[in-house]
Image 1 (cartoon, chains in turn green, purple):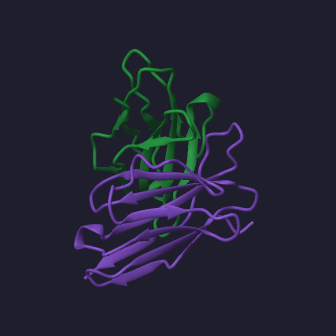
Image 2 (cartoon, rainbow over the protein chains, first blue to last red):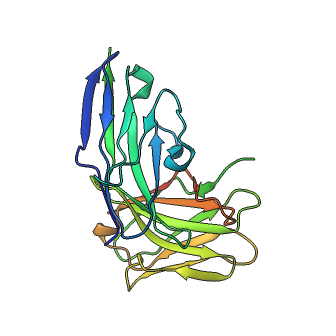
Length: 108
Length: 114
């Protein structure tokens, strides 16, 4: 079954603390994974994709096929990082499967 | 480029009425996706359309829900005889459909059934 699991509904940290948003997937093929973000009152937008191995706004995510994970990390959280984060798996045929999302709250 | 447009942003319907949600994809995009987000849940895929074709409707409820993407005009998600359980945020996304996986999302329509 194709599934994306984000175990935490809410992650609350203080400014400057490290952040790790967890994402695990279940997929029989070679996975293509993404992180989408939704800031308050804004639309969902792509944050980063594993295939490009990029760092966006200080966030990185490494695909670990052994652990079937694609955790999103940032060493020092900022208040403006507060948002809803969705992990997504591309399952072919132009289709994405999303996790349930994790709300990140960064306090001053 | 104005991005993906959805209207209305908020829609209130009484039980038994019909709801029509519209989505205009980004310019140059020919692929449209509809997702539903129920309270406390993630985004659930509903349907994937190209112009005048339904490609994948595996996430659509079997009854009362239909979608179209005509040659001209926006994509429409229609919900007939709405029930309270249809209350949700409905998001539309579009993509150019040529190679890239990225989907561009609209602001969503929040449907409330009273």
